[in-house]
Image (cartoon, rainbow, N blue to C red; front, side, top):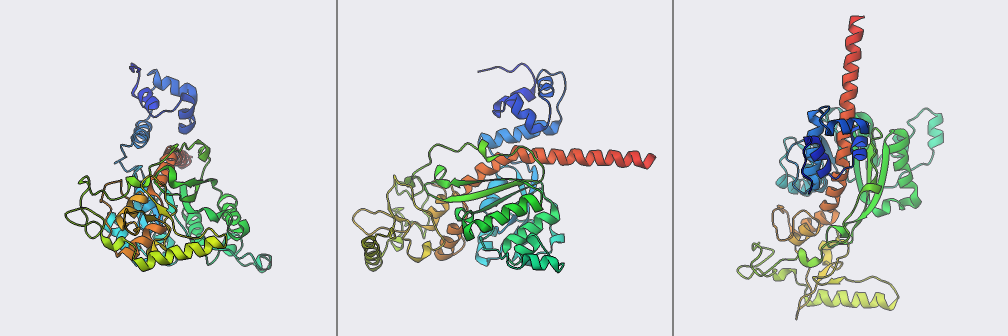
Length: 425
């Protein structure tokens, strides 16, 4: 192990894993400047040292308690995106979520020093406070391109103002256009790429790149690398300036955990939590075991479709397996993820196990508050993001967020200097 005899900067640069060339690109400096800093021939700004410390803390899993940037949380759900961006030092300054039950869960788990707004379409854009990053898990909706040329000839709105009008992506694009955040992260289902024969995704990327002028990259990530569940989602990242962000550099784990890691333990290693587990045994409550009637129905349904050559049916899993995607319809019969039980019918996951499956809780923990009914909880977790996946994306964005903020500060300083010079002329 190397013993550092030079500067704090050299130590921080190496423990974050960056080469001299990489850190020079991130900081917008020459390699010669970086070497001068490391030899102690010049002193880097304190902001640069703080940035490297923050990056190291996030990469090493220590978290980042120092707020370093502000973000707004749109289509917030129960806060999966917020939880991830707070883990890298972000502070949420604005929230919008239309569903009352989701807002109840959100407010039970996050300290909000601002009102949680309802429908984004009712938000006054000028009332949104200053922020650096926009995050949103907007719904997938088709766009209408009929009659665009005619409307253009009549002098009516064109571009995304016309094509996406009435969709919720329009409200996201309008927010970006109005406030010009330094960066954004948009999340959606994998099928967004093929939705409406690819037209929807094409318009989204065109809007973000050509009309709004952002440098955009995207990637589909399967959550099974982080949690025991196949869950493919697309993540779209944009920066107002070219700060060198690329998903190609994001290294994912080779393999993730299995279902056994998130299932309730009855060996005394986790706290008993009624109504999900019973006292004093710690066993899962019987209400999550399928009734004979429901279990028979699911088996007959699966057999009928098997005979027709279809793949429809329930999913039965054990502790060593990786589950199917948890969906918002899980509350109906739990058929996509049923847990094997010896000598009895299979059971649904409990809402607590769903919280762990989605990464809101670590295995064995009961820290995420679930203040709603089981039906609502299943809907909420099924509609949410896998938090560890977003944490990985957010951590990958962090150095580039810092670079974007630094560029903005330098631009403001230059503008101030020019104004000062002009005032003397």
